[in-house]
Image 1 (cartoon, rainbow, N blue to C red):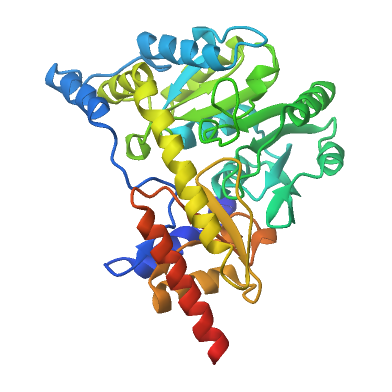
Image 2: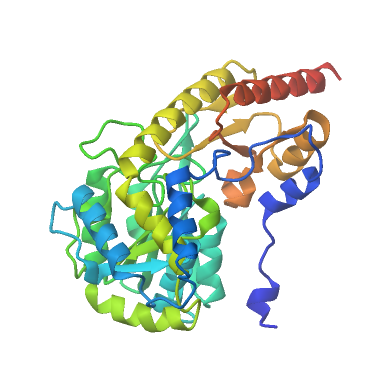
Length: 391
């Protein structure tokens, strides 16, 4: 096999989760998904599609009604510069497939790629799989939160930089770009000819008040022909992680090429899955506001409880579904996460799964239907830390 593939690291999150498989006593918060199933009306749309016998291939870019609905949905939120037309929409087999398609379309072997980390490791790995020369610019922790050194980023994105990868709201840190930062980055990338791949799958999971109830987006500022690919997914804010359904917003000229590229990846998304997505968009007012309101409760419950635990450094995230916190006396986050599973029955994701600079931090997915699970988890962490201090 290619050396690049052989050198890929296995998921450290999975490594921790595997240590707890089969244990019913473990409170698991390691994966980035809610424990609430997809709403019934969305599931029913898929059932009805299957009952109609819709089990055949679909258009590479997705069913026109779904693409039209996505375009209308995005235009409602991000129509500041201009409406998002259907000719800019590609439906994909999940957000991760959209990200891989972007990497396949834009990253040549040896070309310079810059990524802002910590971030979900798949984004960096995909560029490396395509042979990209990946350079990272690290967010830096400040009082438990993570912030961007804008000058460091601008210095890293040179005229020879092919792609800049950003994820905001960010997994795992909760860091979010403000409008002025997005404008600075967009202007700079225009001057260098750099493509921006913006993973904005968490845009709806944003807790500051905004006119459309979502985080700032590059789509609010960019023109249709800017070198910008925005990645979205039904997974988080529609409770559809297992459906594997996402979409991309790209320049119209890129959409045609993505149709060809999709043919060589997945051919198309299953029709019944697309009908579920269409139902989700048509009924988004029934789902997303409720999900976000509950996640705000979850965030506040968890962060406030963690802040009472000695030795924990944590700040309240503006967006996403994770609390990212540091245990002052435990610099090896993978070893610590494994010990917490074995000794405390608590399943968290290790920070160094997201970047070396996040070693010593842990990610806690707070998307739980039952707030008591979160407080029980904090008590298990508190008890474990007290036992270690008593030794």
